[in-house]
Image (tube, rainbow, N blue to C red):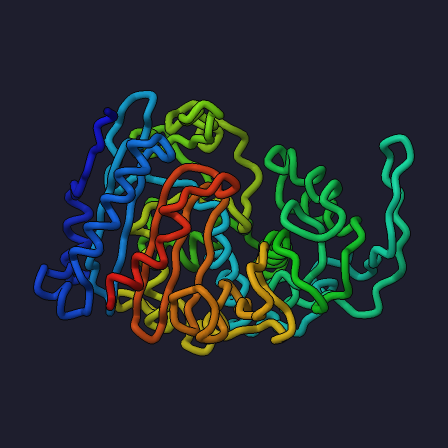
Length: 424
């Protein structure tokens, strides 16, 4: 039987950070309303998933009112070298990058440099004229598209809420185009990708539908145009450095390799196959470092991501440092999509219960199978990462693993249920 490794090892820098956050004592965990037995049972289910080779390892962080009540690592960070998973392991955040990237543009709004109602073409002229797809057909493998001019302008609020209509691998009716331009995007840069995207027809008029995809990439390019800085530098200066998110980076250095998790997919034989190693051979370390994706390019730790989430809960402030005004963070906590639009990649019902803020999906109503309260902010990453924030209870729940969400593991899907169950 595969050995399951539990870890709660803290480096010196982590110890100093924990001292500042009042890491909850066992009695405080109960005072905050958590049942430790349920949290222990959750970790047992994680251990089973690791034993069954459904996943290599994981890190779980749960906090309430600024106090970390549960911080646990299990399994292996790198199966090929049997490196144990530790709580400071670095994961590929994938789409958990989006809230951070969204805040970058919101900070420029706060500075008075732009507005949600601004046309994207004000900053990116290539988006001045867009075409709406009417129909498509193919002849001998070549796609032919019939289009008409759009009647509405593409606004900044559309790209921040995924209502811009551009095709992607996750939706729309031109997946072949979305996949084609995304396939080798990492070999170019943000400017080139966004310019290419502007040439594609869109599925619907701006604001009249929801397709999860490339809007945040467009917003990152707008950040560059307005600020005059590379997108990654702006994010570093205005968000990562002030929050002391020292392990959050678009690309890693060789010194990060020992803590970097390997990335796996099912091998079709009941096990896991390596997709990208957690070593210097990873494309995140040795690959081309030109494409800084606000849509899914960051790598980080559970601890660093907790800092960002706690800053959002505290309306723009963390550890005495003001990152954004409360009015700016309010845009990240408020549904920005029309109520008739369902902001979900794969809707499971017809309740229209998923909205989208500037940065997050948001649960709209106390109905449906989701046990989380209305107002819960959430999202996940294609690499297996997942999290949610419940602002009213000041609750943060983060679960990081390294397996594609396209081949989901039950424990990942059930994470939210276990967390809410632990509060009953």
